[in-house]
Length: 50
Image 1 (cartoon, helix red, strand yellow):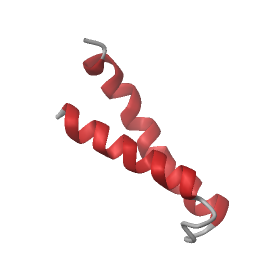
Image 2: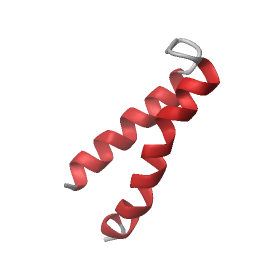
Image 3: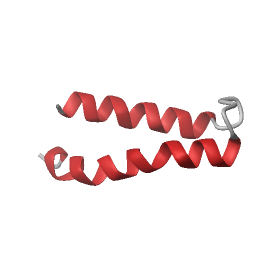
C-alpha cells in the first residue's frame, strides 16, 4: 500500500499550507476555499492513516 510511503511526504506539505493560505488571501475563507478544502482533506487523510 502506498499510503505509509506517502504519509511523510504529505506532512511537510500540510504544515506549509496554513502560511500560504493566510498570506495569500488573509483569514477570509471565501477567497481561499480551494486551499481550505485541500487542507481539510490533507488533515483527514493523515488522521485516517494514523
